[in-house]
Image (cartoon, rainbow, N blue to C red; front, top):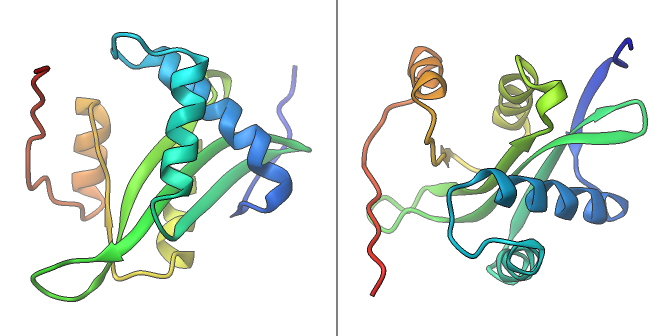
Length: 144
């Protein structure tokens, strides 16, 4: 089956359900205990209420096949605007260059000075470092 050309754009209201469905797909792939559709929908409600949210999508034909979303804020020490990644997901059958192309689109179109990405894949980290990103921290978690 031949894939449609992929285009990139800001998400519009009509994309909400597709973006939420992709967030659910992402939750199924993450090693988070207790994740399910309810967890994903609650997460979407939480980030939508977190402040200014910018969502971008990759579209093949009429289908949203990838998304990258950011909560916008300010760096406390510099005052520069920053986009904190809320989630980044591309359907498996569209992976390869789609996610990076979506990120490149975001870099040109997001309304902030800095983007902050959470990266858990070592290969992706290497690719991002080659594209000018700097790994600056390790996130740790502990269940209490």
